[in-house]
Length: 241
Image 1 (cartoon, one colour):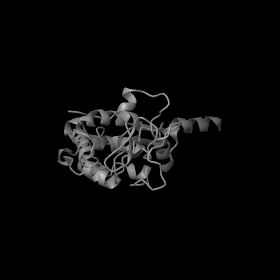
Image 2 (cartoon, helix red, strand yellow; image 1 turned 30 degrees about the vertical axis):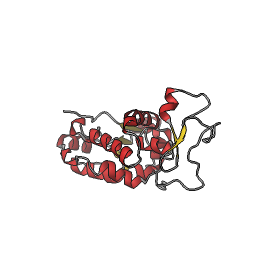
Image 3 (cartoon, one colour; image 1 turned 180 degrees about the vertical axis):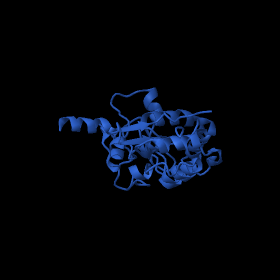
Image 4 (cartoon, helix red, strand yellow; image 1 turned 90 degrees about the vertical axis):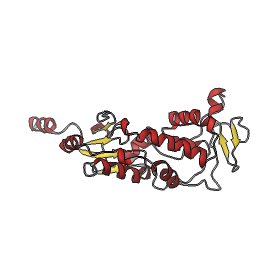
């Protein structure tokens, strides 16, 4: 009996499921999608949020580095906007025509004897459109995306919700907090890093996204996956040409 159990374990595949990132992973950087998306995000910050153009590069880098996505960072520091409008603006003008079917990649994906899921911070509309253009829509069991991780997300800040959540410092006395044109209190993350205050910590974001532990744990729970038998594929198919 012990020998049979050991034999079955050896016959069992090493993994039950593979989680694949989408953008710049299942298609190459040379498509220009990443550059266009980055520029659209910066345009949104200027046109829709009224952020000074001279601060965009530094602000974008700090938000992405500290929150995983610029979107999550913007919400963390106090900007209020509609999530669907944001995604429509950022993804609606992407050069999807640059995405071409990849038969070699398709055959490779279909040959893998595991459950396969897309795990992306983007919204479902973008994920479906990109997979369709790549001819890979039927290679995956499902898509874990922004809406999956934030199913009851708030597009606006409620009246009883604090604009900024600090630990040990109130937003009214914090020197790195200021108001924007709409009167919302904005945490000045650029000033925070240029003149660090040991009594001030970064505000939290209401958005769940990679690479946070919450996002990873939630994705495993949603897909009913064993973390010990699941692997994220983020660079294996990052094929540039």
